[in-house]
Length: 164
Image (cartoon, rainbow, N blue to C red; front, side):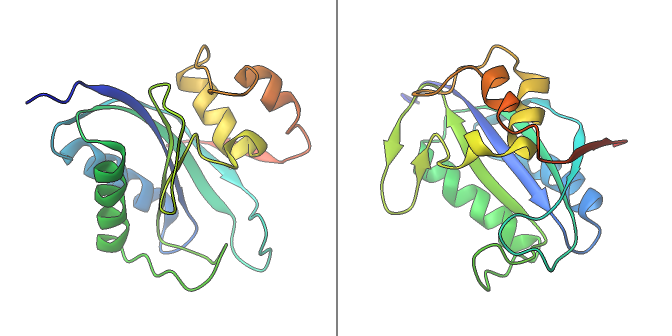
């Protein structure tokens, strides 16, 4: 196998069908991905919905994985996990059983019609930055300030750490 391992951070979110259980199951699914190892996972956090407000709060977390899957192969694997957990893509910001997003993949900066790394809105969302900071306080986001600085810009976003 020629592919070298990469460290990737994955955002997890759910607001339907027992979101805590959905995220716990998704952590297990991440551990089962081929050529991938779950290195760490954040606490779970409750956050208000963004964009479409007429839906339940979300439960969010971030996982750090080491993988030999290329970015697009990893994306396809994450979409398959979402589908197995009943994800239906109705519309932008719609309620969902599971949402998995690649936040970072080593120091890669990548953009095509299916995938953008770093995730284009991660720097504006406390529900991504806080769990990321929890497990990787020294993590660098290519093209952006330090996580602490970005988090300070999201102080108005209510976020509650919950028991997991």
